Length: 414
Ligand code: ZN
Image 1: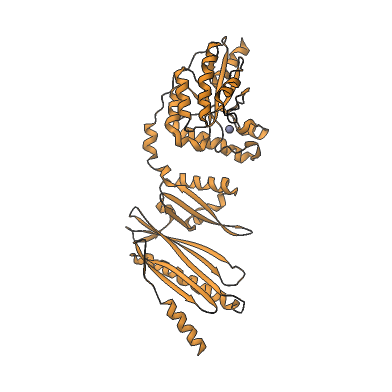
Image 2: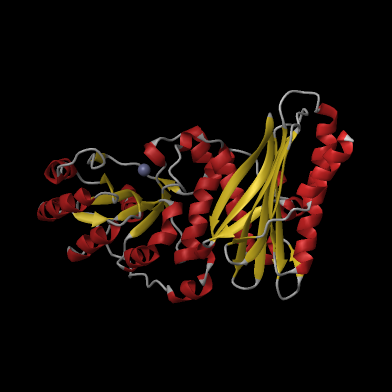
């Protein structure tokens, strides 16, 4: 009798579907079961699309069954066994519906508590379930981005997590133009690596690239008998870079900007102007990791990724690199053919707040000096306005680091 009562309540709750409006796009089915041994709360969407509903319901049933089997063996243990399923629903550009279920289960067994996510992506026109790869455009770039994030956010080798078969199965969600991918990863216990990719960075990329044709200024002819100095700026581009370029232009001089790969696409127009005006761009790594702390593979990636972006975004090929924090080791030397350029005069503009004091350090130069500044502060621009006229007055010619290298070669031969 007791058993019949139990089964009937189970059935009663299982088939008790509450219809609640959620997100005005679909109905919600809710299953709640609360008794002495178990606590079950399941929410899942009942969409307008039959084929999609069928797949979701199949998964819910399977999961529920698994839960029952698991807890059957452990129900003698204290406490209730719990099953909770919830979901997220999004419609993408009237083309796809994405439903991602999150299952949390505690059946007192050795795998508990257990979390599983499952995504159903449905193509409205084809009326069928599709995979992530069917939905995203710019697949190669997105994959590269995922790969890089796994490597640099989690320090995990990404290749074997990103095989075609695996990537098709990872749960995901697309919200506000951001793709979030959940990669189940075993490291002592199962966890999910969470990768966010802003999709709008890939939009209309071709068109913009075509628009951005950078005219390169004719090469300056520099008299090797004149006193030369090279102004250099690290850690940009930033919102202050434009002003610095304008100041240089005002005095008709050029400098070298050692840029970070991950900032390039944000300031393409500024960088394009920078090149047009005859300035030079150097490599300063992708995201300012301390390069001497990285292994050879990571160093190469930092350098090559930045070069790739410069080529892609600005059709520019740098000839020099400044390692982060000016620290060099053999691994860095062996990882690149670019000329490694440090500095001889440090303005300390990253630390000193007063532009006058920065300028005072910046004018203590001699023939061949390389001056270190950062186009990441407004005070640097103010200091430049003081420094440049004084240095011009003293007869210095401003050159880029590549020009300085050429001058030094000529001087050696003289
Ligand atoms: Zn730096």
